[in-house]
Image (tube, rainbow, N blue to C red; front, top):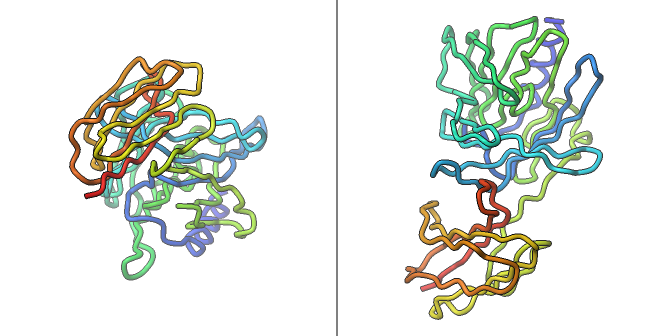
Length: 295
Protein backbone atom coordinates (compact mmCIF):
# COMPACT_ATOMS: atom_id res chain seq x y z
CA UNK A 1 0.00 0.00 0.00
CA UNK A 2 2.68 2.66 0.82
CA UNK A 3 4.32 2.11 -2.59
CA UNK A 4 0.97 2.56 -4.33
CA UNK A 5 0.28 5.77 -2.43
CA UNK A 6 3.73 7.18 -3.22
CA UNK A 7 3.28 6.41 -6.92
CA UNK A 8 -0.15 8.02 -6.98
CA UNK A 9 1.16 11.20 -5.34
CA UNK A 10 4.01 11.45 -7.85
CA UNK A 11 1.62 11.13 -10.80
CA UNK A 12 -0.83 13.59 -9.24
CA UNK A 13 1.79 16.27 -8.73
CA UNK A 14 3.09 15.87 -12.25
CA UNK A 15 -0.40 16.37 -13.67
CA UNK A 16 -1.40 19.19 -11.34
CA UNK A 17 -2.07 22.61 -12.81
CA UNK A 18 -2.15 25.99 -11.05
CA UNK A 19 -5.39 26.81 -9.29
CA UNK A 20 -5.59 29.91 -7.11
CA UNK A 21 -3.66 32.13 -4.71
CA UNK A 22 -6.02 31.31 -1.84
CA UNK A 23 -5.25 28.57 0.65
CA UNK A 24 -8.56 26.97 -0.34
CA UNK A 25 -10.88 28.04 -3.19
CA UNK A 26 -14.27 29.28 -1.99
CA UNK A 27 -16.18 30.24 -5.16
CA UNK A 28 -17.02 28.51 -8.45
CA UNK A 29 -15.01 25.45 -7.39
CA UNK A 30 -15.90 21.80 -8.04
CA UNK A 31 -14.21 18.61 -6.84
CA UNK A 32 -14.70 15.05 -8.08
CA UNK A 33 -13.31 11.78 -6.69
CA UNK A 34 -14.22 8.57 -4.90
CA UNK A 35 -14.36 6.96 -1.47
CA UNK A 36 -13.82 3.27 -0.90
CA UNK A 37 -14.75 1.35 2.24
CA UNK A 38 -16.29 -1.93 3.34
CA UNK A 39 -19.65 -0.85 1.86
CA UNK A 40 -18.19 -0.37 -1.62
CA UNK A 41 -17.09 2.46 -3.88
CA UNK A 42 -18.86 5.84 -3.91
CA UNK A 43 -18.26 8.81 -6.20
CA UNK A 44 -18.19 12.19 -4.50
CA UNK A 45 -18.93 15.52 -6.16
CA UNK A 46 -18.61 18.65 -4.06
CA UNK A 47 -18.84 22.35 -4.87
CA UNK A 48 -18.20 25.72 -3.23
CA UNK A 49 -20.81 28.25 -4.30
CA UNK A 50 -22.71 31.22 -2.91
CA UNK A 51 -22.54 33.07 0.38
CA UNK A 52 -23.85 32.60 3.91
CA UNK A 53 -23.62 34.80 6.99
CA UNK A 54 -22.77 33.05 10.27
CA UNK A 55 -22.18 35.04 13.46
CA UNK A 56 -21.62 38.18 11.39
CA UNK A 57 -18.95 36.62 9.17
CA UNK A 58 -19.28 35.64 5.50
CA UNK A 59 -18.72 32.01 4.47
CA UNK A 60 -19.22 29.95 1.33
CA UNK A 61 -21.54 26.92 1.46
CA UNK A 62 -19.92 23.59 0.57
CA UNK A 63 -22.44 21.32 -1.13
CA UNK A 64 -22.46 17.66 -2.09
CA UNK A 65 -24.02 16.89 -5.49
CA UNK A 66 -25.47 13.40 -5.93
CA UNK A 67 -24.04 11.74 -9.08
CA UNK A 68 -27.35 9.89 -9.55
CA UNK A 69 -30.05 12.48 -8.82
CA UNK A 70 -28.15 15.81 -8.77
CA UNK A 71 -29.72 16.47 -5.36
CA UNK A 72 -27.66 18.81 -3.18
CA UNK A 73 -26.70 18.35 0.47
CA UNK A 74 -25.26 21.13 2.62
CA UNK A 75 -21.97 19.90 4.14
CA UNK A 76 -20.34 22.90 5.80
CA UNK A 77 -19.57 26.60 5.44
CA UNK A 78 -15.99 27.61 4.65
CA UNK A 79 -13.90 30.77 4.44
CA UNK A 80 -10.27 31.28 3.46
CA UNK A 81 -7.34 33.61 3.96
CA UNK A 82 -4.02 33.50 2.12
CA UNK A 83 -2.67 30.68 4.31
CA UNK A 84 -5.56 29.33 6.41
CA UNK A 85 -9.08 28.05 5.82
CA UNK A 86 -11.88 27.46 8.32
CA UNK A 87 -15.19 25.59 8.39
CA UNK A 88 -18.45 25.64 10.35
CA UNK A 89 -20.61 22.53 10.62
CA UNK A 90 -24.34 22.74 9.72
CA UNK A 91 -26.41 24.21 12.53
CA UNK A 92 -23.36 25.47 14.45
CA UNK A 93 -21.60 28.83 14.74
CA UNK A 94 -18.16 27.76 16.02
CA UNK A 95 -15.52 27.61 13.31
CA UNK A 96 -12.68 25.08 13.11
CA UNK A 97 -9.43 25.04 11.20
CA UNK A 98 -9.68 23.28 7.84
CA UNK A 99 -6.25 23.98 6.28
CA UNK A 100 -3.09 25.77 7.41
CA UNK A 101 -0.45 26.32 4.74
CA UNK A 102 1.89 28.14 7.11
CA UNK A 103 2.95 24.79 8.63
CA UNK A 104 6.60 23.73 8.44
CA UNK A 105 8.30 20.32 8.59
CA UNK A 106 8.10 18.91 12.11
CA UNK A 107 5.02 20.94 13.12
CA UNK A 108 2.17 19.05 14.78
CA UNK A 109 -1.45 20.07 14.49
CA UNK A 110 -4.79 18.87 15.88
CA UNK A 111 -7.58 19.00 13.30
CA UNK A 112 -11.32 18.48 13.68
CA UNK A 113 -13.11 16.13 11.32
CA UNK A 114 -15.70 17.91 9.17
CA UNK A 115 -18.39 15.25 8.89
CA UNK A 116 -18.67 14.46 12.60
CA UNK A 117 -17.30 15.44 16.00
CA UNK A 118 -13.79 14.27 16.74
CA UNK A 119 -10.25 15.21 15.88
CA UNK A 120 -6.99 13.76 14.61
CA UNK A 121 -3.40 14.82 15.27
CA UNK A 122 -1.04 15.12 12.32
CA UNK A 123 2.68 15.79 12.04
CA UNK A 124 4.20 17.50 8.99
CA UNK A 125 6.72 15.29 7.21
CA UNK A 126 7.72 17.72 4.45
CA UNK A 127 6.77 21.00 2.79
CA UNK A 128 7.62 21.59 -0.87
CA UNK A 129 6.70 24.03 -3.62
CA UNK A 130 5.54 23.12 -7.12
CA UNK A 131 5.10 25.32 -10.18
CA UNK A 132 7.13 28.25 -11.43
CA UNK A 133 7.01 32.02 -11.60
CA UNK A 134 3.77 33.39 -10.22
CA UNK A 135 2.10 29.95 -10.30
CA UNK A 136 3.62 28.49 -7.14
CA UNK A 137 1.70 26.18 -4.82
CA UNK A 138 2.60 24.75 -1.44
CA UNK A 139 2.44 20.97 -0.99
CA UNK A 140 2.35 19.61 2.56
CA UNK A 141 2.91 15.89 3.20
CA UNK A 142 2.07 14.58 6.66
CA UNK A 143 3.57 11.59 8.42
CA UNK A 144 1.51 8.54 7.34
CA UNK A 145 -1.25 7.40 9.69
CA UNK A 146 -2.86 3.97 9.40
CA UNK A 147 -0.69 3.39 6.34
CA UNK A 148 -2.12 6.41 4.48
CA UNK A 149 -0.43 9.74 3.87
CA UNK A 150 -2.41 12.96 4.09
CA UNK A 151 -1.33 15.51 1.45
CA UNK A 152 -2.51 19.09 0.95
CA UNK A 153 -2.03 21.32 -2.10
CA UNK A 154 -2.70 25.05 -1.72
CA UNK A 155 -5.54 26.25 -3.90
CA UNK A 156 -6.87 22.68 -4.27
CA UNK A 157 -7.21 21.10 -0.83
CA UNK A 158 -6.55 17.58 0.37
CA UNK A 159 -5.81 14.80 -2.10
CA UNK A 160 -8.45 12.85 -0.19
CA UNK A 161 -11.09 15.45 -1.13
CA UNK A 162 -11.80 19.02 0.02
CA UNK A 163 -13.54 18.11 3.30
CA UNK A 164 -12.10 14.64 3.90
CA UNK A 165 -9.20 14.03 6.24
CA UNK A 166 -8.62 10.68 4.55
CA UNK A 167 -7.48 9.11 7.80
CA UNK A 168 -10.65 7.72 9.34
CA UNK A 169 -9.53 4.10 9.53
CA UNK A 170 -7.28 1.65 7.64
CA UNK A 171 -10.22 0.17 5.71
CA UNK A 172 -11.30 3.48 4.16
CA UNK A 173 -9.62 5.31 1.29
CA UNK A 174 -10.58 8.54 -0.46
CA UNK A 175 -9.00 10.06 -3.56
CA UNK A 176 -9.45 13.39 -5.34
CA UNK A 177 -9.41 12.92 -9.11
CA UNK A 178 -10.47 16.23 -10.63
CA UNK A 179 -10.77 19.86 -9.57
CA UNK A 180 -12.31 22.70 -11.58
CA UNK A 181 -12.07 26.40 -10.82
CA UNK A 182 -14.53 28.66 -12.69
CA UNK A 183 -15.29 25.64 -14.92
CA UNK A 184 -11.63 25.31 -15.93
CA UNK A 185 -9.84 22.06 -15.14
CA UNK A 186 -7.10 23.07 -12.69
CA UNK A 187 -6.04 19.68 -11.26
CA UNK A 188 -6.37 16.05 -12.31
CA UNK A 189 -4.87 12.71 -11.34
CA UNK A 190 -6.70 10.87 -14.14
CA UNK A 191 -7.22 11.44 -17.86
CA UNK A 192 -8.90 14.78 -18.50
CA UNK A 193 -11.74 13.06 -20.37
CA UNK A 194 -12.81 11.50 -17.06
CA UNK A 195 -13.21 14.93 -15.45
CA UNK A 196 -16.69 15.64 -16.76
CA UNK A 197 -18.27 17.07 -13.60
CA UNK A 198 -18.82 20.82 -13.61
CA UNK A 199 -21.18 23.11 -11.71
CA UNK A 200 -22.75 26.40 -12.74
CA UNK A 201 -22.62 28.94 -9.91
CA UNK A 202 -24.40 31.96 -11.42
CA UNK A 203 -24.62 35.49 -10.05
CA UNK A 204 -27.56 37.45 -11.44
CA UNK A 205 -26.94 41.04 -12.54
CA UNK A 206 -30.07 43.18 -12.14
CA UNK A 207 -30.00 45.49 -15.16
CA UNK A 208 -33.49 44.62 -16.43
CA UNK A 209 -36.16 42.33 -15.09
CA UNK A 210 -34.68 38.95 -14.24
CA UNK A 211 -36.56 35.72 -13.61
CA UNK A 212 -34.45 33.17 -11.74
CA UNK A 213 -36.11 29.77 -11.45
CA UNK A 214 -38.44 29.21 -8.57
CA UNK A 215 -38.23 31.84 -5.90
CA UNK A 216 -37.88 35.57 -6.56
CA UNK A 217 -38.05 38.17 -9.33
CA UNK A 218 -36.42 41.58 -8.99
CA UNK A 219 -37.36 44.72 -10.96
CA UNK A 220 -34.73 47.41 -10.38
CA UNK A 221 -35.99 50.91 -11.18
CA UNK A 222 -33.90 53.93 -12.13
CA UNK A 223 -31.10 54.46 -9.57
CA UNK A 224 -32.40 57.97 -8.80
CA UNK A 225 -35.75 56.47 -7.83
CA UNK A 226 -34.21 54.73 -4.82
CA UNK A 227 -36.49 51.70 -5.11
CA UNK A 228 -36.29 48.06 -6.07
CA UNK A 229 -39.41 45.99 -6.66
CA UNK A 230 -39.23 42.37 -5.55
CA UNK A 231 -41.77 39.64 -6.31
CA UNK A 232 -41.69 36.56 -4.09
CA UNK A 233 -43.04 33.85 -6.41
CA UNK A 234 -42.55 31.06 -3.88
CA UNK A 235 -44.70 30.03 -0.94
CA UNK A 236 -42.36 30.97 1.92
CA UNK A 237 -41.82 34.21 3.82
CA UNK A 238 -38.35 35.59 3.08
CA UNK A 239 -35.96 38.19 4.42
CA UNK A 240 -33.54 40.34 2.42
CA UNK A 241 -30.21 42.00 3.19
CA UNK A 242 -28.46 44.67 1.14
CA UNK A 243 -24.66 44.62 1.50
CA UNK A 244 -21.82 46.61 0.00
CA UNK A 245 -19.25 45.13 -2.37
CA UNK A 246 -17.05 44.58 0.70
CA UNK A 247 -19.78 42.58 2.43
CA UNK A 248 -20.83 45.27 4.93
CA UNK A 249 -24.58 45.06 5.77
CA UNK A 250 -26.45 48.25 4.84
CA UNK A 251 -30.14 47.46 5.32
CA UNK A 252 -32.38 44.46 6.00
CA UNK A 253 -36.02 43.63 5.30
CA UNK A 254 -38.08 40.91 6.99
CA UNK A 255 -41.53 39.43 6.51
CA UNK A 256 -41.42 39.38 2.70
CA UNK A 257 -44.42 37.14 2.15
CA UNK A 258 -45.41 35.75 -1.28
CA UNK A 259 -46.31 38.63 -3.57
CA UNK A 260 -44.92 42.01 -4.65
CA UNK A 261 -42.81 44.24 -2.37
CA UNK A 262 -41.21 47.66 -2.77
CA UNK A 263 -37.77 47.82 -1.17
CA UNK A 264 -36.87 51.40 -0.32
CA UNK A 265 -33.12 51.85 -0.63
CA UNK A 266 -31.13 54.29 1.49
CA UNK A 267 -29.08 57.00 -0.21
CA UNK A 268 -26.36 55.03 -1.96
CA UNK A 269 -23.19 56.28 -3.58
CA UNK A 270 -22.24 54.88 -6.98
CA UNK A 271 -20.85 51.36 -6.96
CA UNK A 272 -21.76 47.70 -6.68
CA UNK A 273 -24.18 46.32 -4.10
CA UNK A 274 -25.56 42.84 -3.49
CA UNK A 275 -29.09 41.92 -2.43
CA UNK A 276 -29.30 38.59 -0.58
CA UNK A 277 -32.59 36.67 -0.20
CA UNK A 278 -32.95 34.03 2.50
CA UNK A 279 -35.43 32.15 4.62
CA UNK A 280 -35.74 33.59 8.15
CA UNK A 281 -33.74 31.78 10.84
CA UNK A 282 -31.63 30.01 8.22
CA UNK A 283 -28.03 30.92 7.44
CA UNK A 284 -28.05 29.84 3.79
CA UNK A 285 -28.81 32.52 1.22
CA UNK A 286 -31.25 31.38 -1.47
CA UNK A 287 -30.46 33.92 -4.19
CA UNK A 288 -28.18 36.86 -4.91
CA UNK A 289 -28.79 39.95 -7.06
CA UNK A 290 -26.11 42.45 -8.02
CA UNK A 291 -27.33 46.06 -8.04
CA UNK A 292 -25.10 48.48 -9.94
CA UNK A 293 -25.51 52.18 -9.10
CA UNK A 294 -23.80 54.26 -11.84
CA UNK A 295 -22.49 57.79 -11.42
